[in-house]
Amino acid sequence: MSKQLQLPTIGMGMWAYGGGLSPDHTKDDVEVAALQNAFEIGYRHFDTAEMYASGHSEELLGLALKDYERDDFIITSKVNKENLAYDDLLAACDRSLKYLQTSYIDLYLIHWPNPAIPLEESFRALNQLVDSGKIRRIGVSNFDLPLLEHAAALSETPLFGNQVHYSLLFRKPQHDGTLDFCKENDMVITAYWPLKDGSGISAQSSAALNNQVVIEIANRISATPAQVAINWLARQPNVVTIPKSSNEQRQQENLAAGDIVISEEDVDKLDGLAT
Ligand SMILES: NC(=O)c1ccc[n+]([C@@H]2O[C@H](COP(=O)([O-])OP(=O)(O)OC[C@H]3O[C@@H](n4cnc5c(N)ncnc54)[C@H](OP(=O)(O)O)[C@@H]3O)[C@@H](O)[C@H]2O)c1
Image (cartoon, rainbow, N blue to C red; front, side):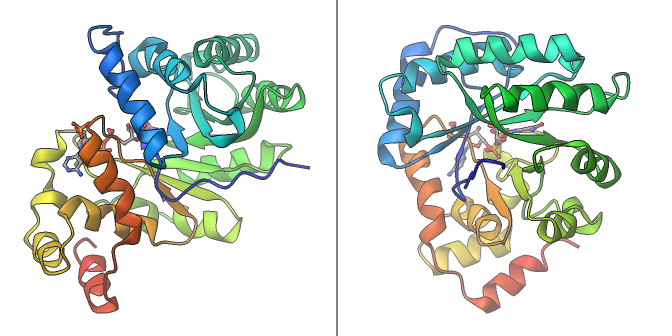
């Protein structure tokens, strides 16, 4: 029996918390406070990875949430594609658990596929981690549809879903069948880069936030362009999203995106923004 896991439609992304690819300790206090603020205002899902700041993102999350009830929040973390061999994967998970100061990770993902390591071997380790209670659910990230189908067939416990780039202006998961496959198989798409462009440039220069249609709709309904972009994802079945912010005001703004009301006519306009 697989454990029930319900992700909130809007969670907290954690790329750039604690540094980029390597750790940066200069903002630790501020970032721990930002994560605690996120929890206090209602965020319940935190998305990190061993890759983020080489584990320091996980460390900050562990520090920030160690005094809250563990069952009150959900952690997604991800194993590096270099660590997908059986022993490496088990060791990576133990490191993440230590950094996160917890005995289990709710959702553990293969961050990127690695053709050099047979997926069967990685899933043997992942299923072992489920059996031992160290992870609750297994998922993948950045898997194309054929690989997602292969992974779903391999996982003893039902595969939770796929974390992919999907946004108002980037519709690949709609076009390549990933979204339909997930809906048909009761899997969740976690949409990353809800605000940024595909190039990963800063959200302030994101095409979605500067799009005239998005701005016009946002102004008319007293929302912000970011809220419109997040809401467009959060309203879709089988889709959740994880905008990152370490700024209290923007954390609040992003979480409230779930409550804004966009008319069907405006949704149609947004649907038509990308083909
Ligand atoms: N699986 C994968 O391969 C993968 C790849 C990329 C990302 N991810 C996950 O997805 C999460 C989201 O992606 P991301 O963090 O790269 O990009 P994002 O959430 O699309 O954008 C984050 C950027 O937007 C700014 N921002 C946040 N709210 C805003 C608002 N309301 N108005 C204007 N700017 C705003 C943030 O700055 P402030 O912090 O200053 O607000 C930050 O610079 C990541 O944090 C990570 O957890 C996963």
